[in-house]
Image 1 (cartoon, rainbow, N blue to C red):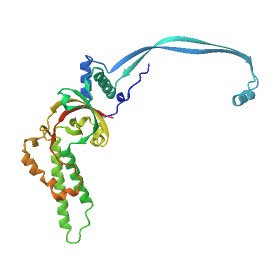
Image 2: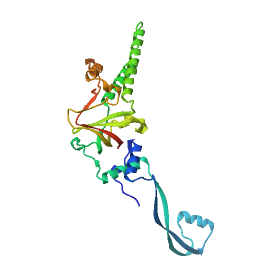
Image 3: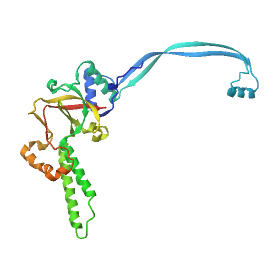
Image 4: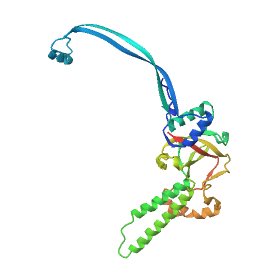
Length: 298
């Protein structure tokens, strides 16, 4: 029997924490099998026919196939003979079908919250929100700055005689700076996770995603499109005075606000305004929540 599916059950994930999906389903169903057997009855009919008559020449028979000329006199008798038989088939779940099943159970049990209202959200809630994802603004700004340095190096004019050494030194300085910034970014992601944000008028969602579960390990797949996020809330900051520290998972979290301001002051210099860099910030102001994503999908 075919089952009609809703569009939100036919999901295409770009991020899926398979272990969490399996664990949650095992808890809900008190253990489960990824393979199930389906039994059903099938009725087969076979047509019986009897024909008698006198044929003519071979050449005429060939003509009849093309010209549909009936050149035989015949007696026909036809009838149906049917029987029922039992058929067994195995159904195998994939990680995406299990995710769809898990979400369906959350909806049926009225566990999943789809209205992003920080005032009504508690730690431990399962939540589904939709919107455009942005990379951690601090990492995004640093990545863009590296791209600017590389582009500037590529389009540097051929040096005049006597200035080659000066240009080589400048390129060496740029390479050193890129290396330092890259090391800084790696420190922000040393735990194997990367933060994404999703914002609207009601507040901001900070997603603490594990890079290993990204489709093709490609962060860019999450950017520029509109996705749904299914996850579990682990922190709630309801007041505007509250904030989420984007450095909380790195050793840089021990630095004071004044020291961080001094470290990043160069990005706020007047000559940097000519570049379309995203706003550099190390904190997300409330109202905001932190969510461990189970799946991100279209």
